[in-house]
Each structure stands twice: as structure tokens, then as C-alpha cells.
Length: 300
Ligand code: C5P
Image 1 (cartoon, rainbow, N blue to C red):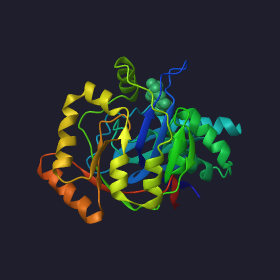
Image 2 (image 1 turned 45 degrees about the vertical axis):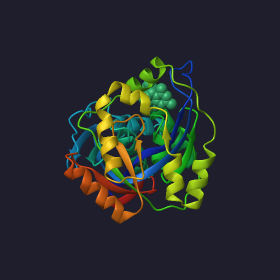
Image 3 (image 1 turned 90 degrees about the vertical axis):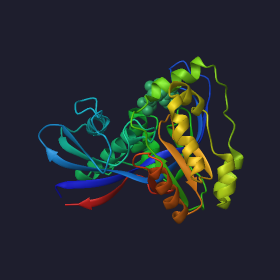
Image 4 (image 1 turned 90 degrees about the horizontal axis):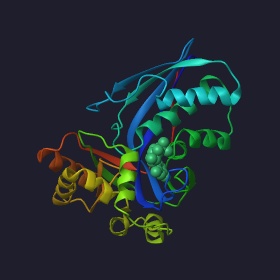
């Protein structure tokens, strides 16, 4: 086997409860993650030196993705090699369908996919708990990108635990031409002195466990929405357009700027997608959730 391709999904936060900043600069979270059907595919090939290449899928703008050491997929590969004490390198090719700096954890998806792909390429058999610990070192959202599905996230988001979700949910992701830095949005949240909401979101968990889309629409909430709108008042337009297009609710994805329109079903999602495209919003995409975490799609 000389190449392995692993697919990893975008994440959204159905609830993003943000507490006061910790001494290490991170914020304690009480969040519910869901993986949705927007993907990056990562292909690894044995190589004498570390290399990374990024190609867009569809209209994704990949110009801001670093192609040197700081690329999170390369950091993932090096960390896995170091963990096992092996001196190996690989070429990492990313086919990017997840918007860059969109609040959908595209970089975290690449890191998770690279860990799984290299574990298979090098036949390491890394136990799940070790892979999750390496993932947590790479970024707060990387463990969830391994797990997928729907999960409760605590601490800075890196501690994940699957939750019951019987729904077949449909979303329309509405990307924004300009990205937002996660760190900047958290800093704005602090500057605005926004509060502390660390309670278990029981009504949301009940909506997921019963599959009621009306109940889900009523319980979606993102504490970073106000900070993102403060930095980018233009983000009110896609939110309002989504509601006008018939979305049951509009939810900012993570730290933004991507919005998610919650829809009743597949047909409704396609109607909302078309209405948003007709209203001039570029490249809205309908996606189901929950979907799987990082998984192999091809060995060659
Ligand atoms: O963990 P990750 O590298 O994805 O975090 C990116 C940035 O987002 C951090 O440097 C920090 O500024 C902010 N962050 C935070 N609290 C979290 C997660 C991320 O403040 N729980």
C-alpha cells in the first residue's frame, strides 16, 4: 500500500457556551458539536521529505492555507511520527471542500484525517485514546474531527463524548468571502464582557434525542455570535436572508463567518439553498448531519 485517502467532515456547534478566559488563554466551553456533510479529503504518500499541497474542491478559496511547517496537517504528521519514535515523512495532499477560516474547523479536519491516514500508511495501530490525545495537542477541535457524529465538548473543546442523536438534520452552509480569525472573535467576546454560560444544554440534548426539528430550532445558540457580528456587522445580511428564505433558524458556525440555515428536510434545504443563491449569496451548500468522523475512503 503506497497511498491512503481519508475523508474528514466540517463541524458546526449546535450550542457554543463560552466561559471566562482561563489562565492559559483558552476559554472553557460547554458545546455540542455536529459533523456535517462538507468534506476535506487527505491523501498521504510515502516521501523522503515532508510536503503539503492543497487543491480546492468547487469554489473554496485555498489561498490562505499555509504550505510550510505551520500547516496543521504537517504538524499532525510530525507529531504522530515523534509519538512513535519513527523517522518517516510523507507527502500530504488536501482536496479542500471545507471553507477556509469559516468557523467549520477545516484545519482540524485536515489534522484528524492526516493522523488516521498516516496511522494506516505506516501500519502503526495507534490506540484510540493515544490518537485523541495527539489530536488535542494539535487543536481544540481536532479530537471531535476524529470522532464525528454529534458530541458534547468540554474543557477547551478537546474532551468529547458522543451524545444520542436520532435526527437526520439538513443544513445550508452560507460561506462568507472573507474569513474570521478564531482568536480575534474570542478576544472580542472578552472585550465586550460577555457572560458565562456553562450549563448543560439539556433542552438541546432532548431535541437531538427525540429528533424534533422544531425543538432543535428553538434551542440552537452560539455565544460567539454577538462578538462575530460586532467585528463584522455585514454578517447580519446572510442571517436575515436565510430567515427570509425560510430557514427554521440561523446559527453562526463556531467563531464564524459561515452561517448555517436549519431546514426541515432535504427538499427544504435545496429550496433554501436556491433562494440564497438567487439573493446573491455565493456558493451556499446543502449538507446533512450528523456524518462520520475521519475515515478511510481509499487505499492504493
Ligand atoms: O485550539 P485552537 O488552536 O483551535 O484555538 C485557536 C484559538 O482560539 C486559540 O489560540 C484561542 O485564542 C481561541 N480559543 C479559545 N478557547 C477555546 C478554543 C479556542 O480562546 N476553547
